Image (cartoon, rainbow, N blue to C red; front, side):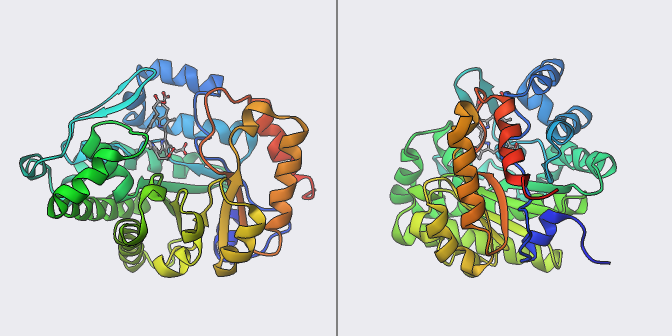
Length: 346
Ligand code: CP3
């Protein structure tokens, strides 16, 4: 049977008359129904580990907007927690974790194969979603890439320049590399289990890839992505994979070819015309409207949306933002973006 889900068709390289659309952080605080369910769960982490409620918030943007894909509701920092790190969120500030800066901290971590115990509620969320999602909607699983997750584990929090992680890389490279290796293995385990539970596509979020320079980008962004992708494809033949080396700039060129990714997600720092010429030549691209348009709306939103659709219209494209939607976004601007993208469909 020919594939009917538009997102899977774009990932297979098909050029569609209207690009499929979904949005990073589409289940989030800009939606009143999300805030209500989150209040019911108590806090953010409890929501991540409550399968019925996590499935509910995953479905909310699908009901409201009819996006072509649903992304699992969870967080990239559940993996460090599953490896034994302490994790909590400070309201208004962000995540906090116990740190890994010494050999003894690393030695206390669990093995990659042990992550499933803590992460099993996430797999249950996916199983619920396979039953509840509309038949045309693609289910996307995800994980953080090793470098990005390591930056949080080393610093114990988010940092503007990933300074502590760069410092450990220089001061104790064997320890740093052991952590990257453990995270690479844990990510393969986690994503493979997500696919077994029903994820049809997986996305690897390397939000801080852009802060890796020169050889370090190849060693700690490109190589781990390549390993994760090839292992996952060996275990799950035909699995489509989206890689997001955020702010990679000119290193987006050839990233899909070098890693085996089926699609590269673009942040909004690269122009769609440049990316169409230099990145889309290798296959599907995703992106890349600036999330600020979801706050400001109006004619600028419409014009920039049309420009992106037009620039990528000659090759496979999935419409998305360049990064996650922010809590101050207006839900009506999301509808305006969708209407603009789909204007040619009916
Ligand atoms: O795209 C999606 O909606 C899927 C779910 C998802 C979340 N986080 C839910 C979430 C995904 C893919 C992430 C990824 C993530 N989490 C990243 C990488 C992607 C990126 O945005 O760059 C990072 C760095 C994290 C770690 C993290 N989690 C941070 C820095 C924060 C913000 C802290 C805060 O107080 O806002 C979170 C929280 C988080 N993750 C929220 C959501 C919906 C907000 C939680 C809430 O308060 O309800």
